[in-house]
Image (cartoon, helix red, strand yellow):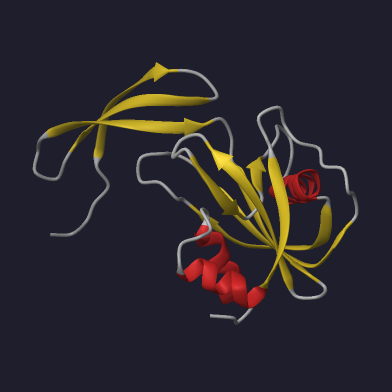
Length: 177
């Protein structure tokens, strides 16, 4: 059977907040109707894999309330209204890490099957620390770490970085896989 786009019958907002949840009803390929809870982030996201001039990767370490765990992550954040993905990536990277670098967009990821999140992925090369003081949101509490590329490669293999897709994309782009 050929895979085809499902027919959407209806959609209604069931929760509004920092993220929204819509209840969507589709007709499945077998003719049955099925409801799905879809999470909508208010906006799109940027994620940055930063590599310093001395070949270390810039990671952040923080608690995430959904899984209630502490994770290493590649820095990421929301694109603000009127902001391009590139400008958002540069701003978020500086705010969360204090680092700047030479940015290149390397792809777009859609990490969840039941969410609308679109992640613009960037590789920042030749990064260096510009600011020691971070500009964090009220619910952001994080540590910045510089980790050797080979260690990050091992961390990716062991699923020790929460948003690992961006890492694999960047490492493929760098020819490190």
